[in-house]
Every structure is written in structure tokens, then in C-alpha cells.
Length: 431
Image 1 (cartoon, rainbow, N blue to C red):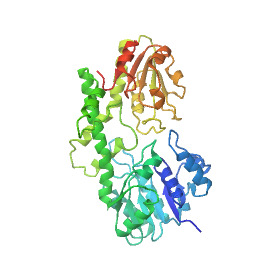
Image 2 (image 1 turned 120 degrees about the vertical axis):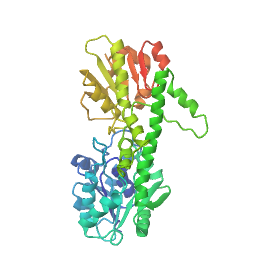
Image 3 (image 1 turned 30 degrees about the vertical axis):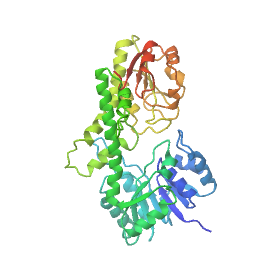
Image 4 (image 1 turned 180 degrees about the horizontal axis):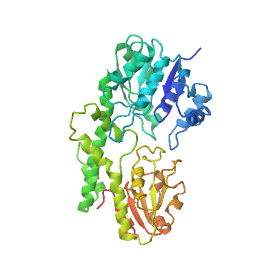
């Protein structure tokens, strides 16, 4: 019996697990991506996403081997799909304005193969108003079909995160923004093959606002924690002890201060939400985002202070520990480490980065050799809380560094222990 054909446009951190789970659910999946190397890797049965992604490499190998998933670069290969899922990036520019070129391109490709009676689902995070203001006009213009009459349309924004891609795809509740009743029915049919949790139908606009607001909310929570952390540095207190005790009070959930907020979503979704109403003057969301954007610079300034006060060598070696934004991931999108590197390479010649998962360097030498990165170093800046760093013993770090100075951006080490061992120590949120 012939399997039903569906297509996924974009095979990154969202699209690849989505394509795999759809194939696992019994559908014939065509995955479309412009990256020839990624397409080739997938078709060989290998997962192009590095890092610790439980179950994903095995699932890619299985569904490709069984002929349920084929990756292509030509969107025409998606012709005949009864459902098209769009999973491409929606970044922002330097002025914090949405860049919708990728979504426009993907939706145009969908429009060229869209057939009567099919479903289109946009999983990409969107500025509110984009579904009706951008997506529908492009689909109708390119396909010659009418939304709500000839095809169904939903906006089911993704809720995945690196390190938990398959788990989140399957287990996290989803919001299903729908154009009309038929879109509700078709959307529920396909997403029931993927999601083992409740699906909440709503309007297209509400779904757009929900996704951007949920990430803006978390960003504001992190900004509060970071501000308390900065205050604790000034007052000589430990923000992590303060946080622990704050959270003993009911209905409190203070987040963790740190070297910065990275990833594809949080650094931009606040701006996507606010962009929908340019005349509105944000009094909470925009200032919180600005505070979080400043944390990598603050971390770099802590390092500069240590170097100025404690390092006597002419050309100090600086070791940045972690290039990915998230523990045990290879995802470097908007990583705080990038801004820290940008700041320090202007002042110092010998800057190296260690990361156990990232393969592509950024501006400075990148190594997977942990001790090699720290050997002869004059300042170690821990930006990512990779598991391998949690196993490090400060006494060993001191043995291999030239100058024992350490910036702890993720509360990886005990401050008192480090000071007793002779480290010059600075920690985000630690006075």
C-alpha cells in the first residue's frame, strides 16, 4: 500500500527531527534543503547535527534506510505532497527588525508545488501578522489557489531545543493556529502522528503571539536573574545562594544568571513580538532584552579586569571554554562566546576556543583538546556549561595553566575552593 506523501522545507534543528518523526509515523517524507552537504549526509543515513541528541542519529539512519525519508535540494520533488511543513529560520537584522527572506523563499517554493486540498503548516517563529500579511498572499499568488477554499493553513510554532529535539517534538504540548475549521481538522490529523501531548487549536494571530510571547517571557525572567547577579557582584554576595533561598518561597522561580543568552529563539523572539506594533514603546521586554545582550560584554570585562590585575606576561593566552550556546550541543547561533571573542580579539593576539562538539571555528583557533586549550593559559573563561567542564578539578586546571586566573560564566566552580588554591577568580553573579 502506497504511503501518503508529505514534505518538510528546511532540515535544521526543527525540520530534521520533524521529518524523521513524520516518517516514523508512517508517512513518505521528502525533506527539502538548500545545503547540498546536509542533504548528502542525511541521504547516507547520518545525522548532520552534532552534540548529544538522544535517539536522533538512530532515527535518521532507520527512516532513511527504510526509504521513508529522502532529502533533496530541488523543491519540485515535493510535488504531490498532501501536507507541507515549513521549518526555516526567521532571524533579525542589526536594527532588531525581522528578516523574512527565508520564509518568503520557502513559502514561494511551497506555492509552486501546492495541490488542491493540501495542508500548509508554518512551524517557523513569526512576527505577529505574518501569516495573513505575508504567507497567505504568497501562497495564493504563486499557486493560483485560495486559502480556506482550495487548501488548508495552520501555524504550529515549534517548541524544540537542542539536546532535546526528539523529546520535545513528541512530548511538549503544541499550539495550533488555524485558518478555518478544515485547517483544524487536517492540522490535528497530521500533528497527532507527531505529538504525544495535547494540541491546542486557536487563531493564526494568537499562535503567532503565543510563540513570541513565551520566549519573551523567559527572556525577561533571565534578565531579572542577571540583574540580581550584577547587583550581587557589586554588593559582594553570591547570586546563586540568593536564588536558592528566594526559590524556597512559594510561587517564586528565579532563573539562573550567566554569561549571556544564546540560541536561535530567545535573542530574537522578543524583537519579533515587538516588531508587530512599531508605535508601542516597550517598558519591560525591550529593556530586558538589552540587559541580556550586555552580559557577554560584562563577562569579557571581568576577564579584562583579571588580566590587567594579575597577568604579567607580555602576550597572555586566553582560553574560551565553550563555543556552543547550550550544554552538550553544537549549536553556536547567537552564542555569548561569539560576542566575547569579538571583544577580546581586538585586544589580545593569543585567543583559543575549546568545544567538544563544535567543528567550525569562529575567528580564532578551535580545538577539541581540553587540556591543550588550557595548557599555558593565563585566563580561562568558561562560557558554556558542557558536561566535560563539570568534571574538571580546579587543582588540575591550575597545574596546566601558566597563570591561574578564571572567569566562571556558568557557576561551574566553587569560588572559595578556587581562591584557596590560588586562583584569581571572577564569577558572573559572584561578589
